Length: 440
Ligand code: PLP
Image 1: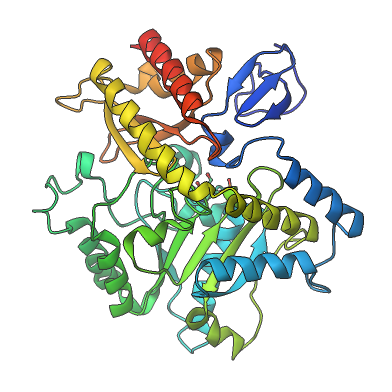
Image 2: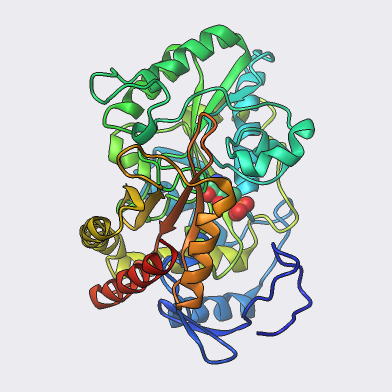
């Protein structure tokens, strides 16, 4: 391993230097091969080095790479916006491109607040959120994020805090069991709205399936139907943060489709550019955007590089590739296969307390004792140890926090590119098994 000059998350650590990527594999400069079983940070959803994407980038760069969004739009940006709206059956009619999921969250928050401001409701300014959530790293987005580890150091700067419990059946915050719980976690939103006063609340933001703060935490059936109903009742916009789940990751184009209800605002990130370029987007329904279109006509957001033609061309090429190769269907089928294999692994390694998620967004919660669900103590550093050992074994996994109510639990996410084959999934699970054997 080599010392590099780039600031890395762990300043005193040596990181391998990657030379190139092909399909689900990354190769470092010593020739070592890694299975990218997490698509990086759940991003490289069509794998590395895809020629069609590289061709689309080159074509667009030769035409024009950048125009400033306040002066021009471009063919590729228009085409991508149209395509994304069509993929939502035109439920979303309007899009605002940015460069990261965090920026998409901030834009969503501002859009929700403006929606009410422009109807003469200036007190509706709060966006409610849940514990066990992650919406981004800047102060506004972090304020809404229930990711304890990422908040702690900056508490004094954070405007707000999450106030709603997560739909966490494995460790129910209400100490109940589904379905006799009657979805207490969903109905808690109503209590919080009433306590705060609906006249102060613009939106409620959720990740349909929780990523970094919940190891693919998936709500029970009926949860989102109740959320939709409560949001409508109190004139609150439901914002679906699909930065991790969107663009096919969970086996459908947008994860909200699993529940048959539609959000008012949706954010997409990671999978839009699939790691080939920084691009993210906030989409809004016509009902959401109408008061702004009839009012100031201006969304008070945006960044210099927003909606640049180069990133837009990549986004469009990624969607075309996904459609051409039927990769969403692949994500659904391969996800089922992976879960079956993981269930067998769980019989051998009781450290796997829970297996959850949909499509190719699969999380494992790791516990010391599967019967009592006792978590590992934080001094054991289980997630970090497992991730690091897996990397040494040539397997890349994504770390996740899991646990609430004072439990700082351990979790990992397995989220390979949708192009992964059955044989490569077998290899992934074999390497995971080897790694679990080493850490347990
Ligand atoms: N929202 C969700 C659900 C995410 O998973 C992430 C990143 O992990 C973000 C927002 C922030 O996206 P970015 O890291 O691109 O700013």
